[in-house]
Length: 344
Image 1: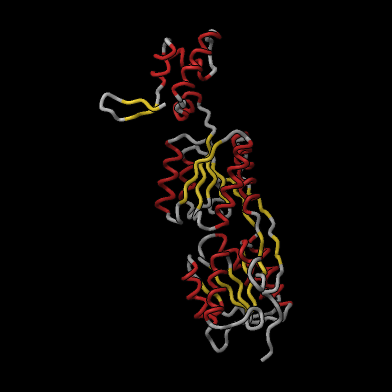
Image 2: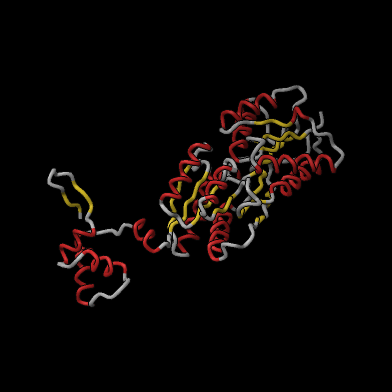
């Protein structure tokens, strides 16, 4: 129930309002609502009835501070417009709820400043722990310095400092390039969003390792930093493919880059896979709906989120255990966007 102050501004019911309505002290009301300490059964029922009538909601932060026991997990992701991060957050939320925890979710939009602001807010609200897709090492270092358990998910910056749940980026990237080489491709381009995060670094390492193992040169002109959004990736892909010696295959290192490549190929009037084969990291829904279907690496973002919560709960149970990194596998799903190169 909403109450009004003398100035007419509405407010939520407080513990004092419940105590007044039940005719008991605030300390008795607090014990009755929390279930801690002795309160006569009749008094407890009267307090609970008053709280229900007033629509009173306990102050969870104050309760956590009193008990030194938070049931909230802070979650910090990079971009909820990207289906990967939305699925990751969904997995975290479902697993947390199953274990009696709630989730506070923040989207930092890849900003180190926003990331640190959120980390400080998590510390202030006394969360039990944090799952983060870090933009830099600073956020994990700060949280650990504040004695907040942290699990890095998807990307890893602080292996010696905290737990992590990541994908075998290098291994699956290598298998993907092997697939293209087996089809007969020799000029294989890689588009990455960045070269400083572990995801981009490891996927590039897998790409180069496959070329080296098969005796193929790593042409620097075929390694392209494609940008963070679809339009930047599209422009980079147009520049790459509008060449006389264009690559016969393109490996887009995430789902956003893949969409940019797809649109660039349409812009140039090229055909998939007749003119260029395309493979993507992150199997988004649209990739199986378009024609031809896009060959893609499927990483289970929901399972990644669930595993991150499991690791965080293990850390809460064993705070002195050494940091551990969990590496999850990913699957290459071959569809019709990859085929042998056209012989000119």
